[in-house]
Image 1 (cartoon, rainbow over the protein chains, first blue to last red):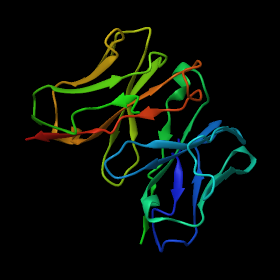
Image 2 (image 1 turned 45 degrees about the vertical axis):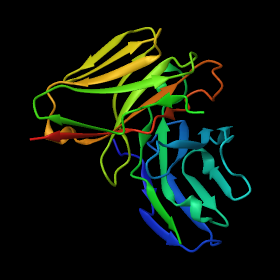
Image 3 (image 1 turned 60 degrees about the vertical axis):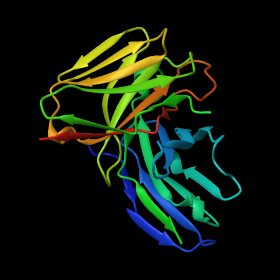
Length: 116
Length: 117
């Protein structure tokens, strides 16, 4: 079974520039998550999709972050304009769906973003 | 307001001995708990989970214990091996109305385990 694919692996941009990350979840997984992991912290949910609908985006800084899930499969996360504090690893994860044993999420390798 | 807490940033254990990683939570509506393991430059990988209707779940060398009254869970690794050296994250989720979306994992800050040969 292929895992969650993310690209790029690394990205360095200047503040105020824009950046986009791409994620391809495990085939058949209805739920897709974007997490932000700042150095020394645990992953924090930014947005959760169920198929192509948004379930939770309460922690997404909507003035600069946006995300979409095309046709309920691939997803992109965009930051525009980037700030220094956006430097983090952005993790995409997917799971079968909701419900007790279905919350087991499979994570991609992440994109390490450095804003200078 | 941290709902999932891992109070030990690091733990060092001798190979062959037991590793015990601890996790506390504050939201009594959490009903599913997971442990993830993370190596540098990789995403977290699922290790073991436990439902709130159980107090113990075992998978090979890994056992998770849940004490709901104390809102505490622990991961035991016996025997510890050098390949177990990684950061371990405790995560919690709820399937009902617990203040978050269904399926949303809330993570602790992680504990870095070092197993010395």
